[in-house]
Length: 234
Image 1 (spheres, helix red, strand yellow):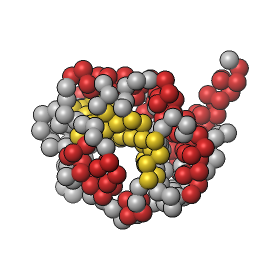
Image 2 (cartoon, rainbow, N blue to C red):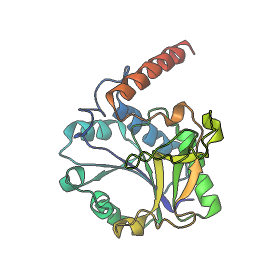
Image 3 (tube, rainbow, N blue to C red):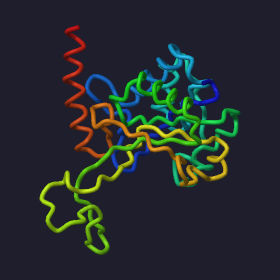
């Protein structure tokens, strides 16, 4: 089980939302939640050989929070190109050349409700089945359309009146990806063959609420505040 890195990564220059990771989120921030989650995994489980949080020193706010709260994790410096214009996997994950592990489980910091237990469970599932790579998806029953042709992708019968009659599609969730470290450094995330990646179907539940937009931030923060009140009463 220890031939895998648990990887977190973040940057301050979000293109869709300013200061997303360190603006107030309830009584905390998304980044504080992220660091505390990674640190708890590093302290309490033996699943991963390293728990790494990759940051640029240019992002001083994130760097300082990580240094203060990440007592049990490795703070890995990443170069400034990787937080700017880089798009190729080898450029984004250049620092993985410093490690020897076969696999990397990258966990997204924009899923505040994703639990440490779920991360650990998914890593164990991956190793038990000897997949090459894995990513998480949700099943979607809906009417999907091709935007170029306006033709339906899942609405295959003119008599259908409910979405349940349509063939389901899988939608990527991006809560985590498990990748082959050497392939990443060769600019490959998946070979797009059978079980590469293996599609791990996750439930449509609170753990997989993602924050990409201002509306999603506000929704998740409202839910977080409800949970804060419940935690206070326990």
